[in-house]
Length: 540
Image (tube, rainbow, N blue to C red; front, top):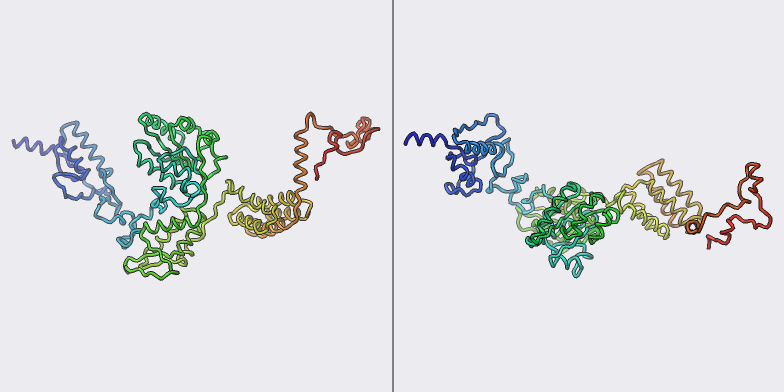
């Protein structure tokens, strides 16, 4: 009996979690109990620190094993233990991997200073996670802005409230709520797990193969009555040929596609796919909507909002007091150019910057020097590029110097190439002013040449002067209108184009003179237009 007990003792293996010796046929069951923290033998036992995996002096375990099957299993468990403790969340401290403890404050796990522990709720939320992600809406009632498509009694809201999700393309500028709306759709799918399955991809980080795999899974799920909803962010990153991967599955109803893009779908989305989806146009958020979003974020972080114009409210808790002025919150909303992501990012930076100050009321003066006005939305190759230059040209045509200067300045501040602006001014000087003021064309050409010589920022005043002059100049579209009529006559003429009359042809050689070049025949009427078009008049 003694020898048998000694043999069993030699066969024991160490548990890689709690390091307790166990028999080979019991090791698997024991490890499972340790992993899921429900070991019956030690219900209150804390996990010991994992071995120092970075130290070269770590002692090696020597275990005598007899059974080949149990031996392989033990070696595998032991190897896994050397790589990382099984199912343990760890953090690196002093070159050692220590086990994650639920008794420790979550803030220290996120990397923030321990001196702030317990001070305020927003300090418990890791600053590594963008605030825009932390406060994303989960229902339509929590969604701010875009009332023209998500307001009461709108078609899209009615469908979503009925848990019906259509194929759609969400088109709008950055930070207008496209991703937030996808989060609302995700929550709808979570409430109906037997009906919907939600998947999110970004076209900037995936390929056609990833979409094909989802389509294959969607076809299989459809056999069991479940429809797959695919949110494809930045869908314009797929070229029109790659977008064909959606066509058949959307056509047959195998997949519900919700795409998001900042580009004009007319140019960026396959026309065949566009005909199968409803385009939802989302606009920049108004300052009031941005303020509501910031107010909601501040409340979720337990940050008080103080209105100093009303009776002043003092923060009672001297050790934990923290607040922000209502004016400062509105200032953040006003400088964010309709972008909720920028607004929330600015608020997060503000709280992070001021978090070490006790009893702090954040004012506009505290943050306006640290957070400058956001860049304005402008893309040299995108739709806004053409929208603003068109607005400038039409303002000149409409003789509105204020608007002409405003749109010109918008392009200058946004970093547009001054030569591009000047070239459009040259066109406007001839098209809209023309012979009513020939000096306008000379000034526009001089402005373009000046921009080429000076560059930015010196050429900004040249553009401003030219824009004002062109807007104030008398207008005549006679040249442009006559040119349009001439093109129309040429394009619609039946048969071959009329020949040049012989009497206005050049006759540089003797042969050409003998053929009648440069001479008017008897009985012919002198004129410069072809006889077939002698009655045409391009001018009113």
